[in-house]
Amino acid sequence: PSAAPIVAPTAGPSSKPSGAPSNGPTIAPVPAPSAAPTVPCNIDPITRRQMIYDILTPEVTSEAEINDVGSSANLAFEWLVGVDEYYICPDDIKLIQRYVVGKIYFQMGGDMWNQCSRPSTSADPNPVCDPPLQNG
Image (cartoon, rainbow, N blue to C red; front, side, top):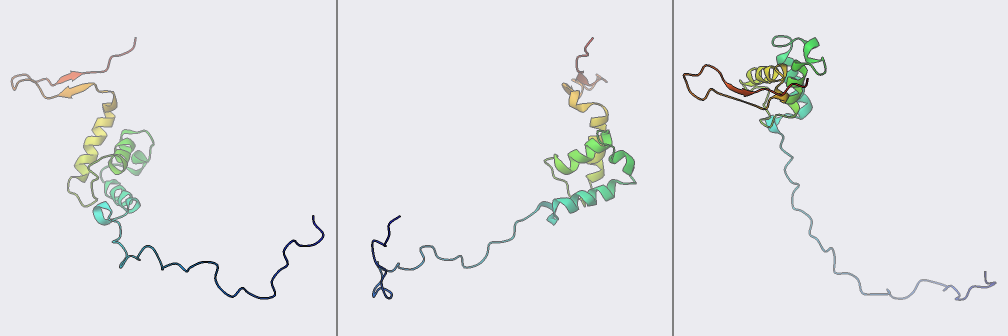
């Protein structure tokens, strides 16, 4: 380090600013806040989940069954509240029907289906199904 400062400090403040002042803010403020975000069913997802749970238990499915991770009841419930693109509201009259159809799907191994559709003619009593190939 040097023994003495190279430039001596001034005794007081400088007499004028070092540059021209700015012209003010560059972006005008928003006149009013934006609207609150909308949520489907007008309820938050956690409340919706609980309301659907309360509708299904215990009348449609027992709490034990719906809480049994991996059971058809649990898979149908989780699909209904978290995956289903229809995003059913708790007050929808089709809620129980949609849950039951989902439960049947999972109970019958629906994730393993290749294809299943109505019979090709009204005279044919059997649907067209391609069951999954069995190993062994």
